[in-house]
Figure 1 (cartoon, rainbow, N blue to C red):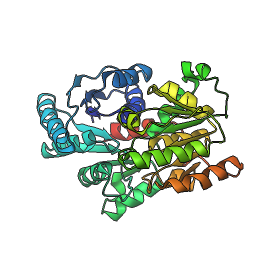
Figure 2 (figure 1 turned 90 degrees about the vertical axis):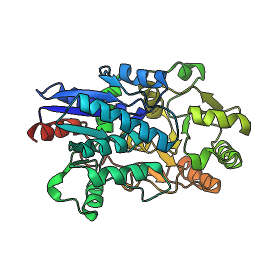
Figure 3 (figure 1 turned 120 degrees about the vertical axis):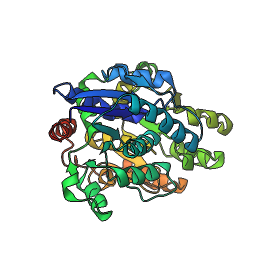
Length: 357
């Protein structure tokens, strides 16, 4: 492959694209970075480009906002025009956001080969838009780069041949390990008088947890009541902030803060006593950093974080929180191990394979 096009659309994509770009810069393979603009919060996106040393995208398709269908359509129309004007040998998509699926469809309809980084991940929950994105993308992909052997097994079950599956490790962990010494202490650390391993980090954004105020309030009260008085630091997603006003929860140890940049947020995570979340990516990072993690979801597309790592799937029932917190504070939470090939070299493996295609 002499020329590839990289797709980044939403916040997590930037973390996954960064090590691939850094690896490509050590080769003769030319690349073009297309930002679909799916996340239209400029501050959020710009922060990631700056912090992770990613060059400015060659184009921003500015396809933010709208419903799932509107956004998918907007990205497809814009990317088709861009791809016609800028032919490429390979389109590389990452993760499972709308941009991943939309750009895959466009590329294949234009007879351009597609590589999917983080292929084969499955939650088996068809109510999640991301699961549909994964399934559509993997049904069209030519080259599959997987984070675990389990993901490869999922692909084989849908008929993908072994020679197309490349077990390379986790690019998100490449970014984590490359930046671990660069983590930045956020101002709130001193402002709130936080002490290492004596506070909790909380993130919630999934509709199942935050869309219904009665449920959200029940979750929050269980977390607060079972926190042993430890400070709870809650960098609040804009989606949640709108709903939180209606809930009206306050507690002396609950600290709602603005969303943090990648380097600041992981400074907190690394030093936290535990993390409570409904995110997928955070469970990978806590596993590598050895931080206990509770996931408030009924399923996960990253079972390795539970089977090998420090994560436990608690579910969305507020009553499940107290027993989990009791286990945590008893000192009996599992230690966990780091999954195979999560060693900081996934992007190098990907680029080495792409260069030979």
